[in-house]
Image 1 (cartoon, chains in turn cyan, orange, yellow):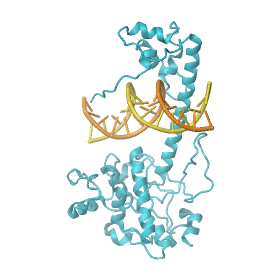
Image 2 (cartoon, chains in turn cyan, green, brown; image 1 turned 30 degrees about the horizontal axis):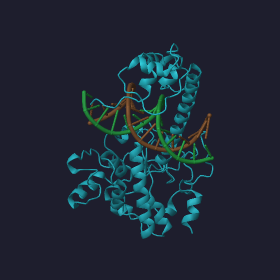
Image 3 (cartoon, helix red, strand yellow; image 1 turned 180 degrees about the vertical axis):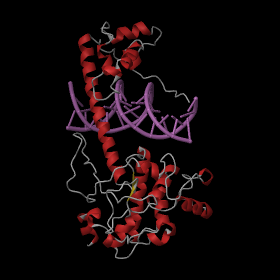
Image 4 (cartoon, protein in one colour; image 1 turned 135 degrees about the vertical axis):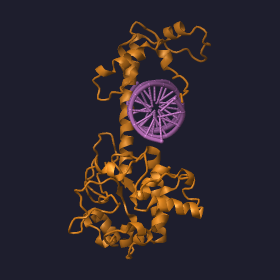
Length: 330
DNA sequence: TAGGCCATCTGGTCCT
DNA sequence: AGGACCAGATGGCCTA
């Protein structure tokens, strides 16, 4: 489909022809800026210097244009044009930095989501939706004081998410999406119905995300082990000069095996050296410990029984984090 | 090839 | 005046 956007307002007026864009694009390779998508406007700063006035260009280009109302714009002298361009260049740089900071924050958010993959990032909108659902689901858990029941918890997380993201979440939480969605279909549950219509269900491998997220095997080839830190690591520092949100460097959950279970060392601790794909946070694990009873997660997911005791007490302290440890022990 | 997602540029608006 | 924020426009990349 051809996108039919209106023409940019001022750019076409500022510059009489498309030639500046062509020149700018052709000269992109020569640019020394870190960003190869550097501004065409910034690149064109040295172009069309023969024009002393923007208004001159407007008059030349479009004689049929209706006269603009209001006070007549100041004549754009060469000096004014220079200043304008300089301002624009600076503003563009600021805007880029600002957006990078925003993206960094989104990345940090992705890392604390129930599933996280460096290779297949959730889109921005899906990240926000999942975050909303996650907060909602955890709030429910806190309010009711009960551990999240596997399927119901995943259903809450999946509400309004796309099918691939829903499958990803379900896979990460070790709930077979197939069973989840088929059951949902049978139960006519409103949750996720719009997001994952049964007739479009294309799940291929139980417990694994569907395309475009690929499968565990392919991801396993590309992933590196995570750095486990506490969930509320005080050592957080900003890696971006303009990013006020400290980077989230990990807290993530132990690596999953292809079957979706943790890879364990001989001593029973998670094998952090093993490749992994998606990291799933298990609120049920932590909260089970917090409320002093064991997780129901295993019993609700018979096909993916966890090989270890998933109660908080058995969970490695360095994974959960001392801060949370203190909270849970309150 | 359509459509989704993204980065970037840009002008407008508000605030300091 | 200048910076932050925002939303529209645009083109690139990728996937089904």
